Image 1 (tube, each protein chain N blue to C red):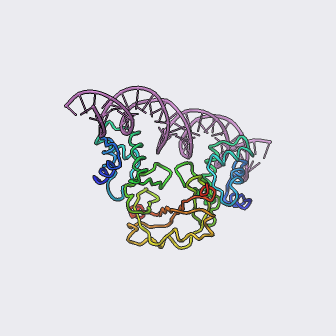
Image 2 (image 1 turned 120 degrees about the vertical axis):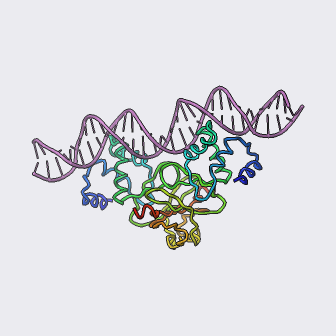
Length: 138
Length: 138
DNA sequence: TCCTACAATGGACTTCGTCTAAGTCAAACA
DNA sequence: TGTTTGACTTAGACGAAGTCCATTGTAGGA
């Protein structure tokens, strides 16, 4: 994750304690935290950090392309640091657990011209839904 | 749409003016209204209908499987009466226009076992994004 | 060290949606 | 047809998630 900090500094990001802490919290595989969860963890490292700053910093990381916003339900947005490798999501319908997945095939090619309505289609988001092992056996 | 009203009555739905109006508003192809838009249109036919009733009725139509909830952005949920034929959505990233689309292929089969993490996968939602003809030429 | 533009703060505000208590009415039944 | 009753509707309070803004603080360059 220090690569991230380096990259950000290289882009002219002013480095502050708050931004460093937010970047540190967003680290790992299958990490999909809400803004409030990020805030809660950031507070343990930097007690005076405000919610607004967490929102601002997450928004900046998203527009820099370093973090993805994930919306799997109508609750809070989640932030996914795995922006380098394109992927989709698998969500447990009961407990909300999320996994990053990499389906085969090319879904963009699966949309015929007759179904494009003249749109310039550039991207597709897929959300698989089901039950995780724990919820399926419960 | 009177089929819908018949089906609902057959399921023991108490028929009220409010419910009839909501069902009438949700009629057509490529209809994806927010709850407030449904309310605004319902009010022109039945001025005293309340927002809460529109929310209640939409929620009931969704749990009866007659209407789908669509979330294409972080704004309000949209309600899609095209629940009979499974489909996905194509969304304009600039103006938010939505079209129902039917991609080829079977995206569920495209998720290898090694990418299922033990989940029982039952469904997939796809959202294509791009620019509609008007926004692309602007 | 000082300056200044950029960042952080906290609280008010907005949007979307849910809940509640009280009033109303569709439809079953006499 | 009139009565009755419990489901339906209403208005407004409430809540969660997120944005905005005026003020205060500070990173990093001169």
